[in-house]
Structures are given as structure tokens and as C-alpha cells.
Length: 171
Image (spheres, rainbow, N blue to C red):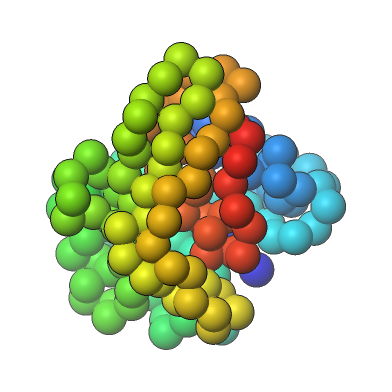
């Protein structure tokens, strides 16, 4: 399974998401690095519009930028972005793919609550279909933090893991 990160170069949030997901065994590929994990899934960094021909996968928009204008996603891809990323929401809508929005309001698919210095609760607000076709029911997931991360990095990483059939617990 592929997780494609769309961002500008040198994005701190992108680096956080890669760090978190590599703790769960992800392989990582960019134009500057290749690393192997346990192989459960592969993260790819993209910095420009890309031709995507996958049967399934996850696209995470990290930045709100016109750089990816007219990006197209095939059926089988699930999009993840911040609720305020209007560009990404429009691109996902135009492609007709499911979207998981991340933010701090009840309308978002993934939110955070009970923010503490060493842990937090990530909440899945509605049922989503994971990449194997199973349903992930709404619920709260306690996540122990090994260091501070941005809210979006935590929410996007939790969404990727849940879509991959993995319950997030330590970031």
C-alpha cells in the first residue's frame, strides 16, 4: 500500500509524518532518500503534480499550494488533508474520492481531544472504510507522545494508520 505525501520541500510537518509512520514499519522513498522498514506500507514524497496509477492508496496533502493544481486521483485512493486546505479539498472533490478531513471541530473526520504533554486522544468522528474494505468504527484512540508533534501531523498519521488497519498508540 502506498501513502503519497504532497508538500513543498523542507516541510517540517512532512518530516514529522514520515518519522511517525516509520515507527510503524513504513518504507520511505523520495528523490533524496530510500529507507526500508518492515514493509507494511510505503511512503512516497511528491513535490509536484504526479501521474498516479494505483488501485488503492492514501494521498495526504500537507500544504495548501497551487503547485498541485489539476492533480487527479483514481478510484481507490483516499485523501487526507486539513479542513482549512481548500486547494486539497477541491482537488479531492474533483477526483470524486473519499476524504478524511483533520481539524479541531466536530465536522472533521479526525480530531484531537484531551491534549496533554505526554499523550492525547485522537477521535475518529465517523465510520470510514479502510484500504482492505473493512469498516473502522468511530472511537477515541489514546496516543502516547514520545515528543511534541504538530496537531496535523498527529491527526494525519492516525488517519493513515487507521486506514491501514493499524491502531495508533505511540507517536
